[in-house]
Image (tube, rainbow, N blue to C red; front, side):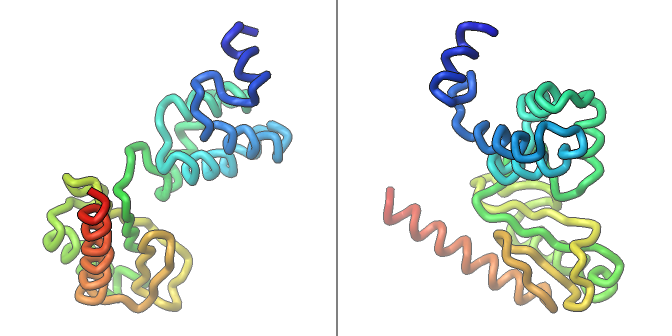
Amino acid sequence: MTTQAAKARKKNTHPSGDERYKAIDMAMRKFKYEKDALLEVLNAAQETFGYLSREVLIYISAHLGVRMAQVYGVATFYHLFTFDPLGAHNCIVCTGTACYVKGAGEIVENLSKRFDVPEGQTTSDGLFSLLTARCVGSCGIAPVVIMDGKVRGKETPESMAVQVQEVLDRERLLEAEAG
């Protein structure tokens, strides 16, 4: 064990000094470092970091004893994992069949134009990310949008534009008051 790793273990921190790794370590311990826990550990990492960096994937691969190709394969298979930092506010539009038939494509197109952000990207100010998912499993309330973790059903292009604008206006107001 390296000196840095030994010191980190004594202090109960990750060798990088980044406390967020503790959440990944806790998830791995919870599942007894089983290779089958890969999806749960990736989810814990995504929740903690907001995205899956190369360093985090390598860390998970090494500690679970899973080949990097498999870690990457699982992370790319599930659409809700992202490899780039997201905005302060995230909008995930379900584009599964039921949602698409009921207008999800129009929601994505309208939000993209209105907020000048391509699908899968983040606005230049870092405040808003527009993402899509193949299916979020809420077909009964299609079209479904997940805005900042809250599931919203039976949305329209107009209703989502209003909601996003309100969120961004509040964020900008808070920034102005703080700054």
